[in-house]
Each structure stands twice: as C-alpha cells, then as structure tokens.
Image (cartoon, rainbow, N blue to C red):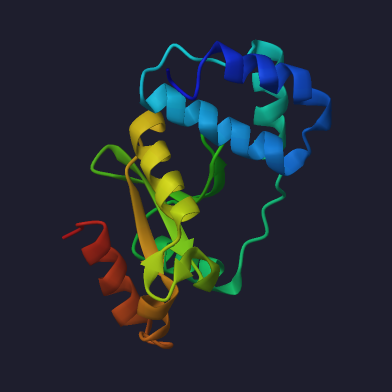
Length: 166
C-alpha cells in the first residue's frame, strides 16, 4: 500500500490543530508534489487553504545582491517585476518577459547552496514553478555574480547570456 493514501489524509485532519506554520508550509509543498505526480490524493480544501496561507505568509526582504541584479536587468532594457507571487504560492525574485515568454529569475545567495550544489528546497522550488506554474526559472548564483565585481558591462553581458538575449 502507498504511504500517502486516505489514511495519511485522515491523520492530517486529526492532527490539524497541532500543525504549526512550518508544518503547513511543508504540507503545501507536499500537495504541490501530488499535483506534479497527477495524484488523486488531496488535502481537504479547508486544510489546503490554511497550508497555502502559511506558505505565502513570508514577507519578502530583497537583498542587496537581488537589488543589484534587478538594476542590471533594467539597464539591459527589461522590465523586471519584483517579488512576484506565482499562482501556486512561490515568490520569484524577478519575472521578466523575453521574446514573449515569461522567465523567473532567482538570485540565489549562500543559503540556497551546500557548497556549490543547490539545496533540496531550492531544487524543489525551481522544479515546481517550472512544472506547475509553467514558468522556466533561471538562477543567478551569488558566487558567479560576485566575481563580476562592480563591472556593470560584465554583469549585463552575464544576464544577456543567461536569458539568451542577443
């Protein structure tokens, strides 16, 4: 038998009053995973709503790194939307339109990596936004951006290359 079945949903309902914000946050990601799998297993709508609300409750706080990337995106003629809330509840650092297609941009600082490998939560976010919101996501890793120092021309070329702009 599957681990995630009606018994799992029933336990979630029994324990609902014990769930903290982090638990609901993770249950929202679990439901998104079930959506990716095209599973018929669903949390009840009332619990889904509580989990979604917990998921979107994070107040955005753009970093200096993120602000720098946004500034350079603007300099190359794009009109980035900042801190965009996607339909499934993730926030993208920026959303730009390139050749009629929306592209999500994540400015990924050190907490998004273990060494130089993305963390599981970073991989999950990129995958779920791409698969469920149908928005491709590109990453600007902090070490790649930092090596460009204060050279605006190099930063703009990096972004053009990343976004496949001519």
